[in-house]
Amino acid sequence: MFTPQQFTITNNERIYAIIEENSFATLISQQQDLPIATHLPLLLNRQENTLTGHMALANDQWENAAGQTFLAIFQGPHCYISPSWYETSQAVPTWNYVAAHVYGKLELIEKPTDVYAELATIVKKYEPADSPYKLTALTDKVMTNLSQGIVAFKLQITQMIGVDKLSQNHSALRRQNVIEELCKSPFDNEQQIALLMKKNMRD
Image (cartoon, rainbow, N blue to C red; front, side, top):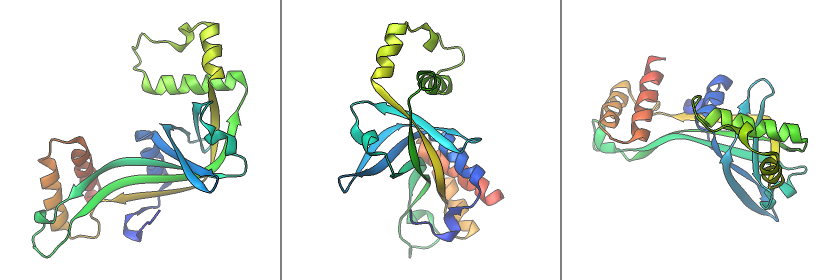
C-alpha cells in the first residue's frame, strides 16, 4: 500500500482499532498467477496477534493456502474532499480515508471444538447482548452440517500497515474548513472523517 509518511500510522494500537471497527475485510491471495479475493468478517486476537474467520468449503481460495502470504484489507471511513472548500481556487480534489493492510500466513482450524469457538466468537461480536439468538440452541445435526460446509482458519499476522489520510498535508485553517463542510453532510462516512480530523488536529 502506498503510504506517504505524513499519513502512515506508526501506532499498532491504532491499526488494531481500525481492524476491530471495520472487521468486514477483503482477503486476498494468489491462484494460478491471478489475485483472488473473498469478502468476509475477520476477528482480531490482540494477544495472539492473529485474525480468525471462515469461508465456504466450496470456495477454493483456502485450498491454495500452503506457503502463501495472504493480505487482509480493512477499509475504514472515506469520502471526497472538494477543493471548493479551500481558501483558494488553485487546488484539486482529493479523497480522505482510513485503511489497514494486514499480511500473514493462513492456518486451517480443523479441531471441531476450535471451529465451534470461532463461530461462537463471531456471533458474540455481532449479536446484541439481549439477542434471542443463541448458537447453543442449534441441534447437533444442524451444527454438524454447518461445520461441514465451512473452512475455519487463523491468519498469523506478520506485518501491518495503516493509513489515516486526513488532510494532514494542509494548513490548520484549510483542515478546519474541510471539517465544517463535512459536518454539513447527512452521510455517515463524511461525519466519521470529520470526527477523525477533529481528533487528529487535537492530537
